[in-house]
Image (tube, rainbow, N blue to C red; front, side):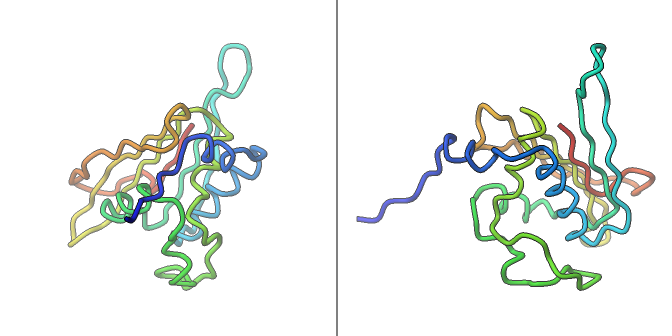
Length: 159
């Protein structure tokens, strides 16, 4: 009899435990791996002066909706392990373990990834939402067609 491995939230909590600078670095490296030429990091403060939100935005190629469904449904098995270099710029890829997204949770309890990408000549957008109480599940919206890229970043992650 075969049994399927089910990763529990307590294990994912251990993966997510890291210093905030390393969680932020992971998001920046993901942008570089997506061939971004520009990556911006900003934050919003709350009324008490604490950091309420961190935003990482880039102009990389984004993540395709189908690829997101696959990537966010498993731990490990990163596409980066087999590719070795980025799609357009052929840069050496950072990370290959398929667990870096969990490091973002050291920055906040809710993480929202917004992706804009091109598919078959159309511009598509969707969001992935993860929340710390349920690290083993992500909400992925349907991809919707957009009229243009405009000034909206192709990949955006905020806490």
